[in-house]
Image 1 (cartoon, rainbow, N blue to C red):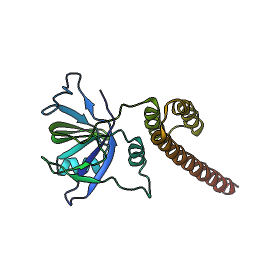
Image 2 (image 1 turned 30 degrees about the vertical axis):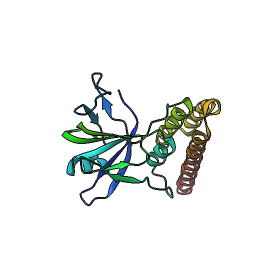
Image 3 (image 1 turned 135 degrees about the vertical axis):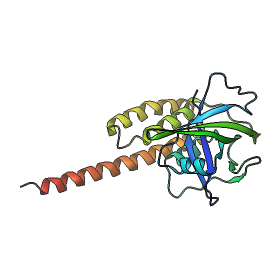
Image 4 (image 1 turned 90 degrees about the vertical axis):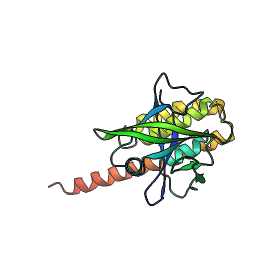
Length: 213
């Protein structure tokens, strides 16, 4: 099973990195007693997360119901407030204050696998900071729209717009104020980026056309 969370890691300098990732859990993972349980992370090379895991070999899985924060971290948004964190209790790392649940982990082994690495990790400590809200369909829609946003430049623009339009119906039916705000933020980000990609493509076509004999 793959779940969505924010992985925090520290560089040797102590600099914090926050990255949305989907840790993979086996079918036999004990969610009621996770300490000692193992999971896999598959960071890309190069990435700060991979560098930190290779050097420091510890991190924190931060489970949150704040889909706006997930979107902003995934899209590396400028001019957003960096999440507040505190020191982890059992490892070298940071726990996000916005997370409801934090699982501190150690890296057991790392294996290169093409552009992605497989990091085998073990949970060594858990902290329950607050109850997590039950996810509704609007929250899932925000996450799916965020994933689509990361595909800009890979998928056709109209395909992205069509899929976001389909997700919008879920938001209209089920969103509360926080989910609506997160949805609006992601949609605005997508439209700005799609417009930028269109302008860049148009400019490149014009330059290429002028170069023809």
